[in-house]
Image (cartoon, rainbow, N blue to C red; front, side):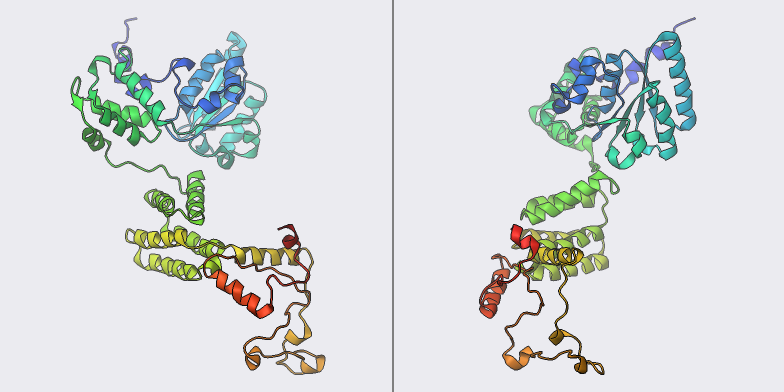
Amino acid sequence: MEPDLFEGRLGEFEPLARRMRPRDLSEFVGQEKILERGALLERILDRGILSSLVLFGPPGTGKTAMAHLIAQRLNAEFVPINAVTSGVADLRRESEAARRRLKHHSRRTVLFIDEIHRFNKAQQDALLPDLENGILVLVGATTHNPAFVLNDALASRTHFVEFEALSDEAIRRLVKRALEDEERGLGGRAPLLTETALDTLVRLACGDARRALNLLELCATGNAGKTVEDTDVERLAGRRIVRYDRDEDSHYDHASAFIKSMRGSDPDAAVYYMARMLEGGEDPRFIARRMMILASEDVGNADAKALILAAAAAEAVERVGMPEARIILAQCATYLACAPKSNAAYLAVDEALSDIRAGRECPVPQFLKDASYADAKCRGHGKGYLYPHDHGGFVKRPYLSNPRTYYRPTEHGEEKRLRERLIRLWGEWPRRGKESPKEKKR
């Protein structure tokens, strides 16, 4: 049979990122944490342990490359499928092939499933028998948190390994290797990247090795031996698409970072995370709702205007819409971040709820009961009630039958004045009397 010339030249047409995939562990760059001595992945590679894994993390961080290296280390057949284009029938076919391979050649099979989060429950369940009896070793890859997308049965049979975005130094090493590699890289066809151009390429990669090498390949096209400046790199990069999934961990991680940045009084971080969410397609109404909650939970009476502003911002966002709504959201986010903080109201209601749920209730005193209906006064309702407006605006008497302290105003912002007023009225605050259980722990 004559050699297939087309097959022989396929490598020439492979993207640079694929050609530069590491051939062994010594060429693997980044992910030092999961490869350090004693870590799960290091033990699997070092001892040849047959264990099913799900590798998860941002794109371009080495998940597919690591799957190849695992199969290589286990001396197993590497069988890749994609969850987008495969179904139960494909899994059964690969299962039968794996059985024959094990029976006739005593060779194990590593089934690599890219985008495993796209498999539904039935497809995931179809994997279980072969994982249970050792016919297949599963290595899945996903950008999603597997705890959210795998069913319990499959999750219990796999180990999760988290990959992180590559450091700038790791990206720089990969780019330089591709520039210098004569066999698989650009070699003699490499452009002359200035230091600022290299810095720009590394920055635009944002920890994604595939993106870095794809951009480098664009820079090299038609520019062999020519100087490439930072402006050329930026022009070729185009507008970057933000990695953000509104339904998965990215959504929760960014929302958490946004809220904690406002709570931590860092307006710059708050605006950045908010911008990331907006650029990723987040619903601006979701952001507005989170700010209304924070205005009460974390600013509270230290600045009562915060809730008014947050509510007004939410209404304005509804009326105005994007893109102008971003300005309204930014105004509110920066105000909340800069405002004095108090969670006293939040703690107060939760402590009161805790007492009620624990059965520590306070019956309504007779003098506070409704006396507006017939026979109410005959039953003693309202007897002894003193109308504060008839007594200078305040009557010094407890309104709980079993006095407790729930609200403890802080010394922050306007709440300090509220605390001072309570002390003037009651003589002390917190008041003496029976403490709530949580107060004793404070």
